[in-house]
Length: 187
Picture (spheres, rainbow, N blue to C red):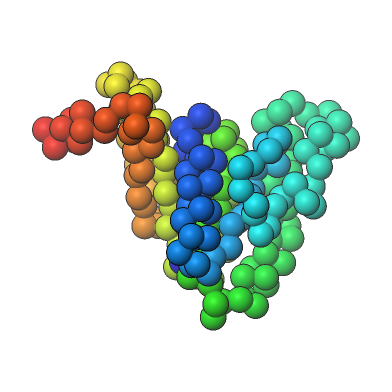
C-alpha cells in the first residue's frame, strides 16, 4: 500500500515520517520510504529513494531563475518524468514490501495541484493501492477558521484525487484533538 503524506507547511509531516520510519524498523515491516521534497535541508530518517539524490534544488533555481516554490515545482516536474524508474524499483520488491511511505513538500499546493503531483499520485494509484494521509497541525486548528480551512482543503483534495483519504491530527501532545472531534460531531 502506498501512503502519500501531505499537509500544510509546519504540520509535522517530516516528524510523522520519522516516527513511521522508527516504527517500521522496530517491527521489521518491509517498507520503502520516499522523500519528494527537494528543498528540505535535512531529514531525520533515511529514505530509500530521495529526490535530492537526482535533482539539485539550488541548481534548478539558479539555472531557471526561479524562486523557492518555482524551484520545488520544477524539481518535481523533472522528477516526475522519470517516475517510472521509481515504480520499477517498487515493482522489483513488490512481493516483499508492505508499505511505501511518500513524504511530500511542505508547500502542499506545489504537490497537490501541479501536473507533476498528479502524475506521481495517479501513477502510484494505478499501480498499487494508494491512500492519502492529510496531516493537520492540531494546535493551529484551535482557531475555527484555520480548522475549517484545513477541512475545506482536505475535501478539495479528496474530491480531486478520488483516493482513500485519512486525516491525521498531529501534535496532540501539545494540544488535545478532542475539541476538533467535538466540532465535527456537532455539525
